[in-house]
Length: 193
Image: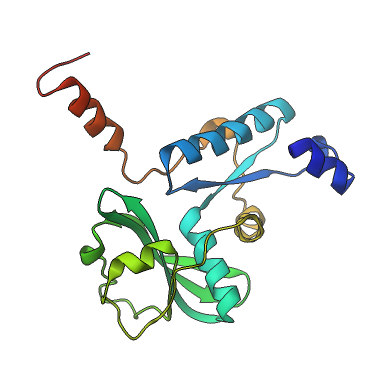
């Protein structure tokens, strides 16, 4: 698929300035597969990479589709296990999308924006898990991240020097202990490797 896109664009991988990817939050398997492809391409072509928050991508897309050029968006994704991934992003024009509350994971009833201004828009499939919380705020549970807004976020980071050597970049699982909990459950309490 990468070869097809390069041929269609009339460029070679060596012509690319950097590779971008969503570094999370998201499903462990999905993040690993995406990053594995990016790692292989980046190592092979000697390219830097730009990791972008999945929630920022969702916030950018929601703001664009809603026509929001100033205000805040709270993207919400289902994190499974009775939790949601969420953040709060300030939109200022087409290119500025700044995390006011960095990406978090918690139960839907624990989502709170504290002393920050309430969001203008809630977006993402996890919105439906919030129930009546944040009633009166526009919501769109149908919005999902996509490549166009990943590129937008990556371009903004690239212009601020946000491209890095692939070996220095990591994924943002937010909930790192998940694999440990599953590991413990399988082995049972008190058992070790």
